[in-house]
Amino acid sequence: MHLFFYIRGVPQFEAMFKSFMQSQFWKWDRINLETGKKETLLVQGALRSSVLGAYEYIFPEECLAEVLALFGLEEGRTGAEKSTANYLKLGILRKIFGAEKIPKEAFKQAKKIPTSILVKGSMRGLSAVMTEFVTIHTIGIRKDRREKNKKLGYEQEMI
Image 1 (cartoon, rainbow, N blue to C red):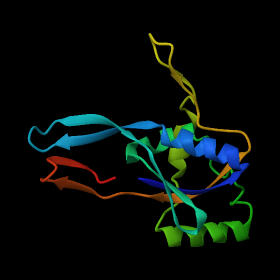
Image 2: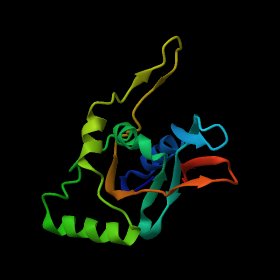
Image 3: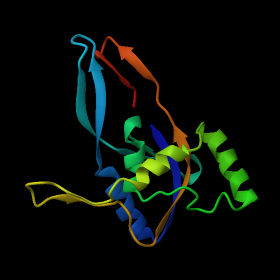
């Protein structure tokens, strides 16, 4: 899945935010075509520069609510719903990026997910990827295709 967005803020905090985004790992499920069993791997979220100064973050589709929670994204955060001009701009940008709106259900699920996690039996923990002086303006999401790839030997999301 691809999440398209703009970031705005103090340059050194933007750099820190981008670094945090790239250091996140996500569970990725796929089915082994030979055994028919589900396998889970950890994959690193990928941050790319996109067109018109935007960014895209690539991650497994099942992780959408977790991504929203970790990055502190909330429905209507940028006020686009309140301004007709902003609403139209986001609609045009979604068309350009081939994206769609983030489902309201994903935002509801994200609110239930803790932004900080302590790893049991360890001194490690995870915390939300939010920094001061950086704002994220979400555009939308685009799903990847899923396929049974005999060459790879898996049925999987082609992220």
